[in-house]
Image (cartoon, rainbow, N blue to C red; front, side, top):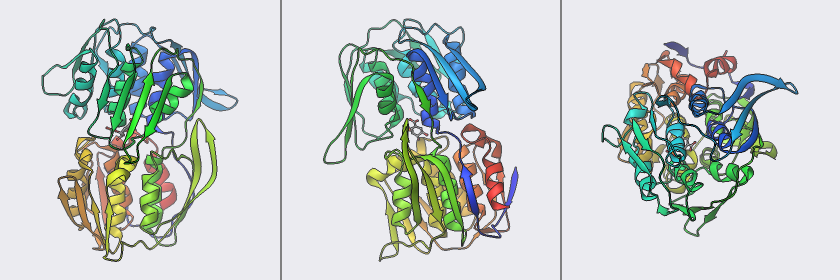
Length: 443
Ligand code: S3P
């Protein structure tokens, strides 16, 4: 449990957030499938990414995780063995709390000559896996849910010949898209994944850097496709992981909620498939400026956020939905906190996917915000927030969901009295030093 109090003074200074989780996972996975060494700087040293390292070590990949200095920078080296270089694991692969590890690795494992079993923690064993089981089965894979409940543990029988498919995913999901594409690397023929809106495209951009022939196509209606022509060998590369915009989001929100605050969040990834939070907060009236934009492995910038009075539209209502949702899916909980402190109503819609995350984030955000005095209601695909009611401290149940714990730490800044975050240790899933960094700007 950690007890937090209302902010007593403006938040000022520079913040460095840790590396991007999606890119860190992929750098290990793709590095393992490439021939030669992949050197990673800026890697996110968190529980989820360590699960990925652990699994690939069990698949026979040597990963030098000593964080040893190369030119003074901590580097992780993956000694990749090529697409055919993985070896059979001698035990079940344990993915902890990580949906990305579970789903992406399944896409790789169905194409191997050996059998494997995958499972994770209690949260992983409740998350939907039919979304990958179905398309991978269409490709000829033998993958099933051990308990026949559409969830992990997953049982994979290897030695299957896969064929490329054209798959129309009804939801925009980078994890599903990536699992299919990774299986597609081993398949006969092209693999095409359509989605209703472009989900984060790190798999496409990074596989291209590793030598694969893959690209995105966008249609006029905003729908998107990832198109893979298999057959190209992957080769090791150097990757510099930018700071995670999903972690930066907590500091962006904090600066916008505490009067006279000004925070500069350094070296944050600004891939356009991830910047929905900036777009939406700006539409709410936030003063956010991107500085020092560069492109090194991925586009990145320093994000300057100044306290701003936010507003809805002329009817006093602000709507978040449609194609913005996949570009800010993990940031919606903290955006709900910002919305709760504004003097307007916010409708979050088209976001039913929130229910399929580490916790049911519609229920867990709504329940905890209600406990703090917010006027908020859950809907089938999001929530309606009647902003402006004063918030007060409460006991926050994180449900072991890292994003919930960080989201409600931010809420404490605007709440009278004490906010107690229960099970706050779960921040180690994506941001182990979160409370240290948070206290450094608050105190
Ligand atoms: C991720 C994709 C998203 C996101 C998750 C990371 C990824 O999940 O919520 O935190 O790295 O591909 P979905 O693909 O299920 O939307």
